[in-house]
Image (cartoon, rainbow, N blue to C red; front, side, top):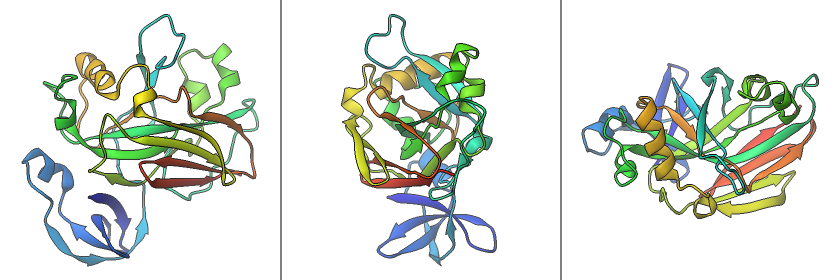
Amino acid sequence: MRIARLDSGQGIVHARHDGDGWIRIDDPYAAFASGRTPADLGPVTGAVMAPSEARVVVGIAQNGPGHASPVQAWLKSPRTIVAAGVPVHVRRDAGGTVAEAEIAIVIGRATAGLTAANAHEYVLGITAVNDLSSPDRTALDPRNFESKSGEGYTPLGPWIDTALDLDDVDLALEVDGRPVARTDARALPVPIRECLAYLALWSPLGAGDVVMTGAPHSQAPVRAGQTVTVVVGGMRLDTPLH
């Protein structure tokens, strides 16, 4: 199922993709927690929003080749999230800009009890994220606050795909329609489910929270005037840079 959030003109609602349109559904997180499929509530139209209104956005650092230390987590403000297609103004005062195409995990329920073996039982689905970054700032800011916190620096979406395989999902990065990176979840040195278990060991996550799983093989320098596309499991997240 492809689940999106739509601004229907009478409020923001959840909807599932149905052919060329959308069907409004009841709360997918409540349905997930109770082990049922969300109920259909009728056709709906509206602008596609970011698919999750996360309270917490977690990034996975050091999930790449050559790191001497294990993966670590860092936090990114959920206020940096924007929907697919929303133009993002790159900061001119922070050095160069890098697009990081990542597989984003949307948590379906409270993560108490999550382990690497059962991690899939806590995941509502997968979406695409572009973790825009200003890497020149990391020399002064090793905690990623300055380098990751630009307005709109977390394009997310366009929907949550509940059918994708946590362990085997394709990932690609394009700039102005030109492929610059192609990889998949299997290429991550630390598997996604192990990253989730690490997070759950140290901090609670809940419904709608987003985990960005790292971009060791899927990043590229970008600049204003270009359009960045993150492709995850067939969904395309386009972000024009201004």
